[in-house]
Image (cartoon, rainbow, N blue to C red; front, side):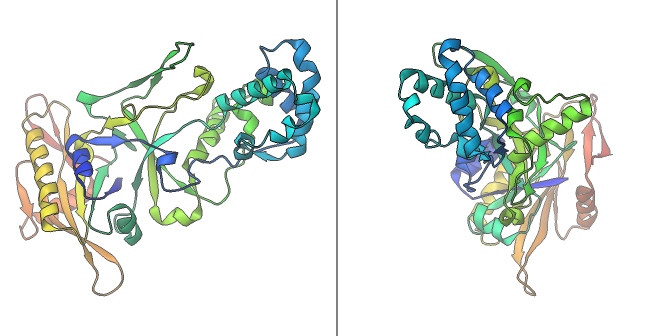
Length: 387
């Protein structure tokens, strides 16, 4: 499967290309204001709200909190159904503070404890890298490739994944809290990232937000491994949901495992450096030049890639795979308002095959089907097919 990453032409994007950089962006850094929003709704279930308050106020003296249970539950039930976004808004609890019973240090303390508890389990940060399955979409070239002056990188997935560069792999992220807790947590990342297709729907998946909290709150028991998988798949789903108006993007994402706030005791954000990874260059198998891209810009990109391929050809190791690299040019169709992709040249490790070479069509067909060279320890290589 091929995935496409549209890039504007700039010194910054050239640096990404030179060093195989992969930066995981936050929702706030994206162009969809509804990115990763929680539209899930809490129901008016008194028992669940009560159990949630019990956990939120676990460390508060029983004599203080007992009289406040009903007041809080009644308020929350009156407001239900409540979306996660509404519950987490800064003004949601203001009417509660105006009541006489809450105009005391005890009421304010309980409210702060509840808000901190909600923050621990709701609205976790997620980071992702966006790709597309469509290499010839007019709007994508306009929005993400500098109005057709940019380029589009072509990646070949292996087992549905993009792998990290072996010599620059980061399998863990160390998380440290800069507060009195002195907390140190290691978040496992692993050597690869799975491509996950975005789901285009106006309405979010139906799931009870009480499930985000410890099992005691919802009283929901998972009885099988299959049920556990389905349950957590639903929890993850809304990170892949976007409105139907974005469907033209045909987006697929790599997700970075999030810092688990229920372990750290509060929200933790990755630094920009922690969100920078390096992909395996062998999975970059082509580039498409925009229809308005200058010859100078195309030459700079080609120079970078040819140099990287040449360097790699002199240091291949056992088991390493090499896919041919294809250069494409987008052209404006003369018959209809569409873009056409024209393959121009193939870099086949040791040779450059031009469009008018006799072997070009055969080599190009092998590239499309997924054929590659796999090297052995003796320095020899065999041709193999990779889905």
